[in-house]
Image (tube, rainbow, N blue to C red):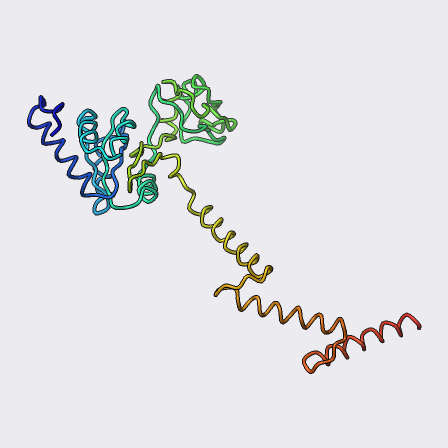
Length: 282
């Protein structure tokens, strides 16, 4: 225990020792933001992460103490502590961890004062509501509602709040009644330390489908380049030889080089040219 932590009560010292032990046991240690996650969902997340990662909620100051005492580069992780941070430990690489955490997210209703994570759109069409005060409540929230055929209907598709804008109380209440859940709730990775490197979540958000497509395209282009430049490799040797044989055959036919492999093609070409010439004369 570092000298600056000797004044701490024993339970805090024990927590610091536990954090340090877990950092040394696992290949990756990360910080996740727990703000706004209901207790039930925290339990669901723990269950989904079982046998893959360990989540530990503790005080930010104790996390900072433990990381500073470990040093060796992992203390840089402490600079990302913000809000309701918790620690996550795993032996997976940071890209897999990020993808796993994204899959634990669920949609929740928006609360007044929260910022929209994306444009929130209310679609045109009938609702399940019967005529009543709900019409005025929706209109006050900026949603174009009216009564049609005995039901409350949204008259036109409308973006009620843009990404990054604050959701007011009237709109939040209206979205709940329309069962629109725009908020992504789950563990938000703040930073990860893996194999002596600190990873920001911005570099971990990879579209796997698009990334795979780029790899396939790059491999095809490399193969074509190797074949067209006659750069022999185990993978391209057969294609290069096949291409060379084809090119040699075409050259022999065009130059009328008589050899057993192309004589029939040369004669066929001559016949075609003769037939074309006869047609022109006739």
